[in-house]
Structures are given as C-alpha cells and as structure tokens.
Length: 336
Ligand code: PEP
Ligand code: MN
Image (cartoon, rainbow, N blue to C red; front, side, top):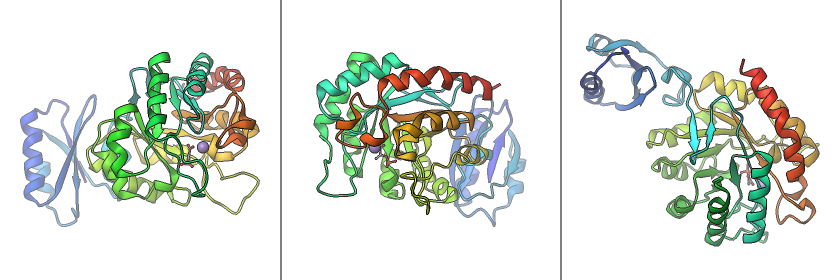
C-alpha cells in the first residue's frame, strides 16, 4: 500500500507515518514528488490495520497497491519520474533525448570522432560499451577500464554524458567513476545482486528488459534497484525473443505504453538490438517515439562494415542526422 500525505503535510508528520510503518514490522520508502509526498509500505501488508495510518495526522489517504512492484508502480507517485543523465540529457521531459554511439568503444580516436559526430547530429548522450557481454567467450570483450577512460575523454571533449554497461557488482565502483549512467544489459536483467549494487549508487541506471522477461517480471526486478535506494531508473525496451527470425529480436513497441500505464518511470527504446538491422532502425525509432518513448538509445558507427561489434545494426552519423528532425516532430505531436 502507499500512504499519500496531504499537500501541506509537515516533515514531522511524514516521519510519524514512517515510524508507524516500521512499528508494524514493515519497510518504508518515502517518495517526495513535486506536489505530494507518499510513503510506500513494503512487505506483506495484508494484515496491517490501515485505519491507524489513515487516522495519522497529515495523511490524505491510504491506497492499496496490488501490483507486486510497490515503488515502481504508477500509483506510488503522482508525477512521472524524470531522470537526468549528466547535466543536459533529461529523460522523461518534453524532448526526446537520443543516446547514440558505437556498440563498443573501439579506441580513443574512434570514440572521440564518434562522440563529436553524434553530438553534431543532435544526440545528448554518448553510448559505448567498455565491458561487453558476449555470447561467445572468444569474441572481443571490450577494452575494460581503458575503454572507460576513452569515454571520459569523449565527454571532456564534447560535454556529452556517458552511458556504459556494467557487468558485475564488483565493477560498479569502477564504472561509476567514469560514467554518468549505468547500463544494465538484457543478459543481466535478472542478476539481482547487480541490480542491488547499482541501486546503492545515485547515478542513473538505464535498465534493459531481459530478452525473455515478461513486463511483470521486469517491473518486479526493477524494484531491486529502487528498493536499494536509487530512484533514477530508466526502463529500456530492447526487443524480446520470439519465434520470429526476420529480426534479431522482436521489438515490442506496445511495451512502451504498457510500462507507462503500470509505472511512473521513463521508458526508452533500443531499436538497434531490437531489430538487428540498420535499415529497420529509422522506422523503429519513429514508431517508438509515436508509441510514447521518452528517448532512444541507438548504435551509430562511422564505418559499420568494419565495426568490432554489431555493425549490421549500426546506422551512420549521417542517417542519425537525417532522422532527428522527424523524431522531435513526432515527439511534439504525441505529447500534445
Ligand atoms: C548493447 O547495448 O550493446 C547491448 C549489449 O545491449 P543488450 O544488453 O540489450 O543486448
Ligand atoms: Mn550492441
């Protein structure tokens, strides 16, 4: 359940509600919105006497949350969550921010060039994997910390915020040192210890849906990050496994409005992993924004044929520049 405080509730009244929740043997999670503060009650609240909470001073109402995800649930928060990656990339606002860059960091000069080119095309954050989760252990695994340093140099040069993947709990501190936003990949989507580890940070987390996860499982797993204390979660639909094989994954655009229906968290779409083919990326970018996506994460490479990873699904900076105006136009249209 959540306890919705009155608009003019004092800090003391909120603290008293927290005290009552803890006295009932449950865990509290205070969410401070722009207009209202709510206290999410976490744990098995079925036997709780809600009257005690309803009668506490400063309380407006007590709302049961039937969903198993208490903090991520739409009802837990009046306003939609906005997440800022670095100083300039706002996810969940009126604009449609684009996070763009190569699948992998391939070298210092390469990432510097790419950062400048995606910035010129209109991207507001840079992506690039320094630690790569590869299906085959003999494939290129990324440059590790050296790759993180190259990303930091690209940020230094362009001002673009850096989004990069973290693979293990033990590398969270290292990645945090260089990145503006953690990426949790599809293969780690149910690595609960990793989710808890990034949940202890305050840096944003771009958390991809597992390729075989239902939306319900996805939001339950999101709770690991939120309940660990980090509210800055960006959900990401990146395609799921189906019987269909004309694309690498099946990009579920309908997941976007469904996630918005169930949760207050912003949702971005990754049409690159979502399709596997560069020619499908522009139309799927437009479809995602039309479906209400709060942003996009797109793989871009200057020479896709020679990319070290995921060249087939990488668009060029020229194509990115070409599609940007239509993305903001569609974004404007659907936000009216
Ligand atoms: C990627 O973004 O390059 C990546 C590996 O993504 P995913 O985890 O969605 O496969
Ligand atoms: Mn990739």
